[in-house]
Image 1: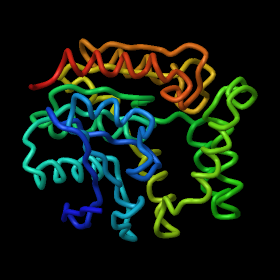
Image 2 (image 1 turned 90 degrees about the vertical axis):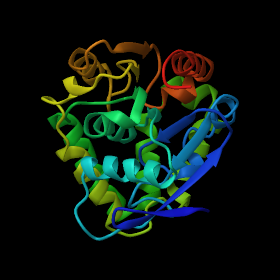
Image 3 (image 1 turned 60 degrees about the horizontal axis):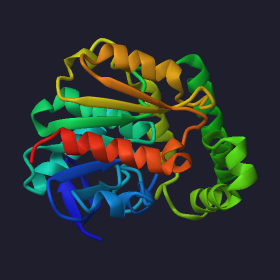
Length: 269
């Protein structure tokens, strides 16, 4: 597992494929699980770079406050360490979208095309309460927390007709050591809840595609996606109907087609 020194941490990353670089950033998942269903497909056309955010997986988890701005600077440092001056960025899973958005704001010269999965400009009181509850629940029982989060991530139809997906997701989330230190999850949630791009998202100038689940996603549903779409000039928005938070799993082929076509049409060669 390669690591590089970035800011004040050693950051873990991995690579697969060849071609123009594509930085893949997700939310609360280790690098080896990030878009695992699609990585080999993406790697047919791109040099895919995944990573562990600070506080996740094999990257360092300092016992200090975190911010989305800090995570974005980490990724800019990772690109510098890999001698990549500019690349496509896929930010998904909610928090990864915030980091990708902030990277395009703070380091616009490094982002040639941006795809955001489930972004928000700023959390609302409903999402803040959900995340506060998740912090409390994870302290009590990480396995129960994993089951609870999984319930929010998939449609009832997925639980009923594709149980291998939901069972596997809950086991992976509860069984792996996603957060290497006891304070790491809280630090990341606090960073998420403190983020505010309402007055700055308009600075994003690169081609931007926003992908989102339908209103069945109560975590980061269209109520946020429409705000981000309106804030980023020239952006496009695609809503995957009849899906929940993990829409890229529930609508595998459509998500892959949308992503592939967007990055083939936009970004540097």
